[in-house]
Amino acid sequence: MPQTGERADIGLVTEPQAKFICTDDQASLQTLLAQAESAGTVPWHMRDENTGAPINFNAYPKASWYFSNVGSPQIKTIETPVTVDSAHMPSLAYVPYILTGDPYYLEELQFQSNWDWGSLPPSYRPTIAQARQFAWSLRNLAQAARMTPANTPSWLLPASYWQARLETQRNFFEANYVNSTSPERAMFRSCTPIESSKDSGPTEPAGTWVDPWEDEFVTCVIGWTVAMGFSTWQNAFNWKIGSTIARTNGTSGWVRANATPYRMILRYTATSPFAANWKEAFEITEAVQKLTVVNPDTWNPSDMTYLTYTRGALVYAQRYGTPGAAACLAWATSQLAAKGWTTDYKWRLGV
Image 1 (cartoon, helix red, strand yellow):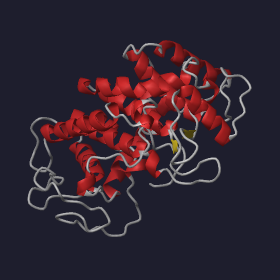
Image 2 (cartoon, one colour; image 1 turned 180 degrees about the vertical axis):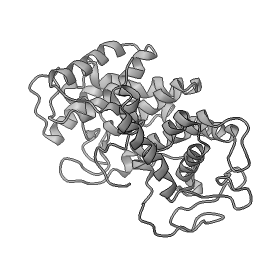
Image 3 (spheres, helix red, strand yellow; image 1 turned 45 degrees about the horizontal axis):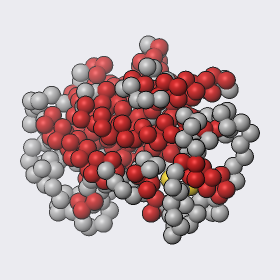
Image 4 (cartoon, one colour; image 1 turned 120 degrees about the vertical axis):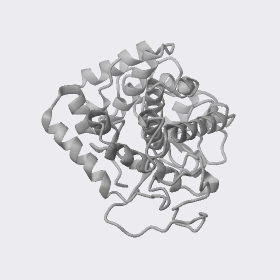
């Protein structure tokens, strides 16, 4: 699971799930059901031996299976062939539960979402260790909150449990990101912890960069959370989409030929002043990354995968009437079409 890179299992849904949703392909249906069955082999089944349900963190607020002995209780894990990783976690059970109503899948979804919480040290919950980790954990949590009924058998946790945790995440996000005065959050709307960004060579100095492509995951998941009916997340979406709009509107000062760079450099060194605006941010990124721009309005990198993430975020922005979103979405869509790029089914979101 921790393997990096674009994969068919990572996204709002998996690629077989998306292909079935889009085309009714029966082979994809069989694959997505097999994926869901395989969820039972993932070692995220932390069960309360007294109730049979996933561990209730209201009853055990300091329980943890983080590798260091910080939990109370500390739940020991064993080595298995599958390494669970919230930053690269597929959505295995949500769509199959919708399709079948089989409670096995709902139980797997609950175990999956609970694992995200318990894998963190108690004193760090909630937190954002990586933007993609937050995105997929929020995806799992919103799915559990949306699909769990109010009244459940004893071996499942009720909707109120998941909805309360979702509200905890929203309050955390608004307090620490939406209302933050730190430049990488207030100006550039990033969820990447810039202070922990590592030195990856001369083009990625430590403490200087954030990951816009990971941030698009966060934006898409928040947009989807609102679409699920959790309207209290709209304020968070309105804040988060600001970065996507600025990188694609062609007027912010950021050159949209590089709308979704792998790294966005916001200062020259970890102790340098932050870029004061989007124009300065691009100038710093251009200088440090040694970018070459031929046409500022034509997508520049050869790999357009990252632009499909950006387009997905813009789809939600247009749905919710974000100012400028329609033009930005039209530009992103036109760039993909112009290069004949085949977008994965899991990112073929429609307005």
